[in-house]
Length: 596
Image (tube, rainbow, N blue to C red; front, side, top):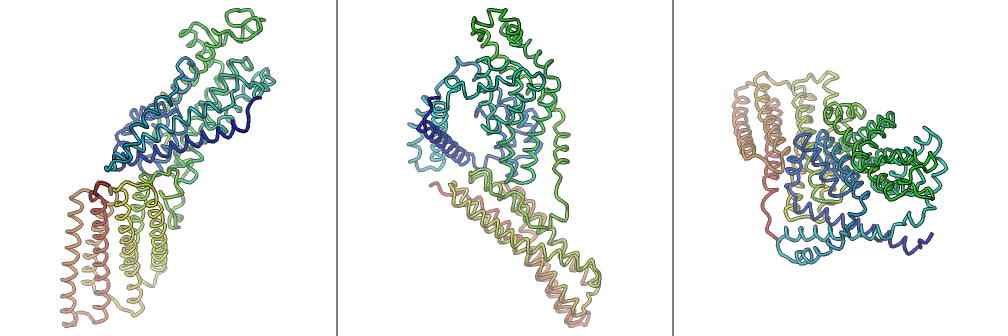
């Protein structure tokens, strides 16, 4: 075999150029898209049909179902896409990947893309020196695009040529005449081979060579391709390992979709193969299954086999067409059946990978922030936004616990359980602030647009204020504990006034969460409501403070009762201030930045 160490090192360099181009292109694209990315995805996946079309188009463009499904898993992990939306895109990706098989099978359509993409460098490089950040980002995207296809061209140049080195795979001929066992062996070869190369297109190309050389029959070639349909799921599985539960469920959905379809076809393999063979014959006039029959009849058909027993050009064309038709028919049938059961499919995946036990939710964990599957800072910001909303939800539960303590009998076990639970949540909130802050600082070190940098600054302020709300909720609990230790009881009128104040605080909290949920596009009406709620809380605090002095002087209740009463009201007023600070952090987060 004529393949040197220099060739291997050149192959590694080509792969490095390809990966670097992908990274630069991805970062540039996300800087350009930035805030609009979520809206684009929302439009593209608003229903099952458009979601499927999105999967087909994206996979056909980037020529990799693995890459498109990894992208989908990343979007789900970032909270940009729901699981139901992701399933439709994955269904489409499986059909879109057949475009690659048709390109490979039709050798006459080979085009050296790098010869054309390099021309874009003449446009992209000057754009890097422009003042406007949008132009710079577009330039980065074009340069990354060029590097990506230059890398692909070099990879194809330095990958070992199996046609020139047939000894690499010729050993498989020893396992071709074992009946059903051969079928299963080559099915598992397809799974393993695709897992190793992480590309069903590469498996198809290798299969095409083996069939063209006559090492294996058309049927066994189809078995390899069918196995490759399962093997290609390894990439999104690896990508989801560092993601959240939704990301892992999405990867599992991809596995189930491919596995169920592959097993069904494997059970009806021969009838399905005959269907593909008849479709191929109807299109080009030759049934690739007839090649095996011709070989078994001692080379009875000279139009399919040459004098040495090899395939004629006509036979090779039929095999190539049939091998491309097989995954096309398979994935199309799989899609047409599965698309109607998307919701049932999602429920099945959720059943296989259930949410953790409710008690475990009180353990410290981050739902959207992890080690990250994309190195794209703009998407990482979206993940942080989702995590901040989760942070806010946890603190809202703390507020409910604090209010619950006000009405509980301090001598009961339920009171102690609630207090301990609130204390645990306060510790969790401290750790969440630290972890989200570390994550945001790490993201800030990446390549961000000016708007992204301003957003990071705003989110750092927001998490500080949310943690202050958690501290204040815990302070309410500690105030109640001191009150109970001093055997102080509030009159019924005081309890009603405390409830009135906390009604306002809880309304302000709900309004704040609604703003955090749509952090990118907060409604003006919600912002105005936040200011009005804070003003109402301040006014009520002032009224109760004046009334408290009057009631103490008139002996309505004692001085101690008045002190603890105002401590609770004071904490409630602080809660309102912190909530307004969060709202202002969101409000100023998207202040237009100067062009740089």
